[in-house]
Length: 104
Image (tube, rainbow, N blue to C red; front, side, top):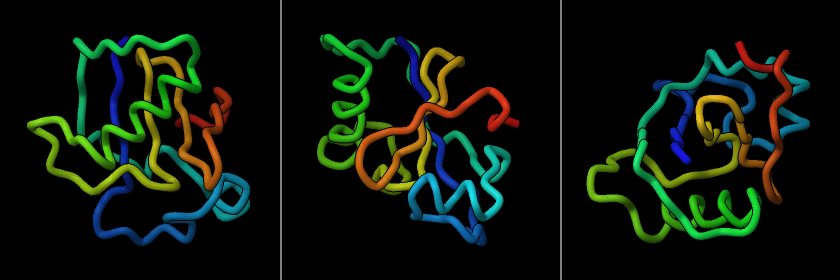
């Protein structure tokens, strides 16, 4: 699996920064407000589910940062892009898979 960590572009001016998915959706959410801050195409985690994978990525980008990572900790409203096909929004509790029409 490859993954990209996406955070909001600086300066953060979005009305939904650090807010849950439902609030973001109601306040103009757009993936155009994000920038990739980390990319890893050799990333392997032994997991049984996508939820476990995302939880391990969250832990890594909050507790055990990769050597070259220089951005903020992964937080609510950040996005993890997996294999360039699945966009996962970090919600206040868990993750929300973005629908195709939400990606732009």
